[in-house]
Image (cartoon, rainbow, N blue to C red; front, side):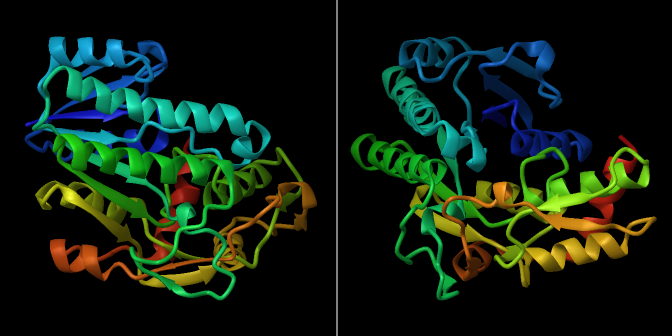
Length: 312
């Protein structure tokens, strides 16, 4: 089975690719992205440096290297803070990369390649009432990154409905990923390790009151692999854990696991112009279709995250 990862330099692609390689699954995995090969840390069988926003280059690539059985479309700039500072760049890059991918598939006649489009719960918006979010909940993105991701979803569904390219969409809620530094779990854990080493005195943070459902990296990987067995009929799937907590609760778990006393300080500049108050999901659609359930506790995942940074 041949699987292509777009956005191959990203944290999510690396986490999944490493797991496939480590578990010796019967897949051959390929990566594609803008960065040169020497900057790619994920263990792909082959990597290709291509700008997918160029649909001609994408079609040429698929004609030469295809067909692929599946594509995990991770390609996105997923830095929310950066998107506030550079909205035009993030929206432009993320939308054009998806258009280029699907145009490439269409123009080379690769209409049977199944595409797992990786989206985000950010598309639901701030959710101040704390409602449980299902796939049918209203989407109201509140930052440029989320706007681009909802646009990507509509692009994917357009090519499914207009050209019958098999597509499904995942919205995975918060998960621990040691390779993604710009999320609160990693930011807290890295700072704690720096304090343990004497490299800094204080942990800084932004808003601690937001609520999140969280899963560990192993459960995230298993969920992403489970989607391969689903029908590619344009459906959207929430993926989330059973444990809900405030961002401040995550910080307290990590502080208790630290090897020294951790002093923390709120910094206003770390708070988003528009923040997400609650991301709690109803993921019954995905669980019923796949049988997937989270197995790793959040506390264990966070302790493993600390140990990862202690060793690196």
